[in-house]
Amino acid sequence: MNLPLVGIRILEVAQFAPNAVGMHLADLGAEVIKVEAPGLGDPSRLLARPLDGESLASRRWNRGKQRVVLDLRSEAGCDVFRALVAEVDAVIEGMRPGALDRRGVGYEGLLEVNPRLVHISVSGWGEDGPYRDLASHGLAFDAYAGLAPPIRDAEGRLSRPTRHVWQGLEAAPLYGALALVSSVLRARETGEPARIEVSQADAGVVWNGWRIAYEAVAARETQGERLEAHAAAAEVTLPTDRARGPAEDVRYQYYAASDGGVVLLMATERRFWGNFCRAVDRPDLFERWPGVGYADHDYGNQALREELTRLFASRTRAEWIELFIEHDVAGGPVHEAGETFSDRHFESRGLWTDAEVHGMAIPSTPTRIDGERAQSPLPSPRTDARGEDVLARVLGWDGTRVAAERDRGAFGVPTESRSSST
Image (cartoon, rainbow, N blue to C red; front, side, top):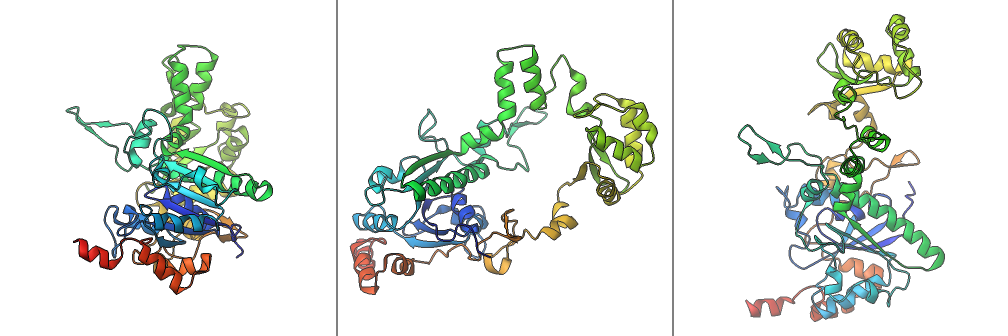
């Protein structure tokens, strides 16, 4: 498969979740060179519980990349970094704002060696604002965005939500990858550089945008069309319309099947509702409650809900899904913990990474190019990979030049100096 980003070369200096910007791009064929400090380098390698010396997070976020060890606290290391920047399309900075500036290799200076450079900074809180320098990780951004409200027990003690799916840290790299590729296209056409910034906290806010927009309107208005429209978009039940909340929804609702599985019916369009009634040989339901053309949830219709509850209890979940497919009824299976990976559709989609290559099986990219999943065949680089082969290939350095830079301390304190100082 000819991946679309083959020929794009990117230099990455990132830790933890911002590594996913490079991951997405490597999956699409970009050459991503990860620069790490001597020693541990990216601390995500030890995140949670390592497997065979490396965390699952690092195996995921750093798949498809190559690794170069550089000491950016040294003049020699920064010199090598600048030499690499001259040969790339983009630089990813995935640390606290200004991390590369503090090391003397910030965006403005790098333009001197690569005038069409695309530079992206992915940080927790962004490059300005009161929280700019607040040290935080993944859950903090969802908590800030209202996506992870606290759980209170009977005694009023607080705890963080369980089974929470982190959203800000997953969304930000997607925005970043899109902006980076768009800017590289422009740079190749016009020579114009770009400085991009994406905040994980901002991404969480945007992911929860409907709810936050409603809350902002509700803080100013207690009634009116604007408030009602925002409430509907955010699926918020207003005090003046208790009958329109998700719990009172009838034709856009969960129902229990005969085998204990759960099915989602989404017959809010008259076409789907009519198809459903004919499929279950209940034209009387359509005649009694025909509804309107679109977005008719039939809120609060308890008589219909009781009928549907009895109907759905007459077949298994799998039988309902087959009926939906055959008769063009909108809906789908509802999975609880442990059910998704055994679903036949999931099995057919082939989302697992190759455990022999990546050291684990985890759903990877949903992107397919020309019918094939767009994923780099390279695993995450090992901690002991020094990257001298990368310097030879990208910069054309021979062993003598690499050895000279090593002696200058570009890759960390030389062995002799380290032993004499301990």
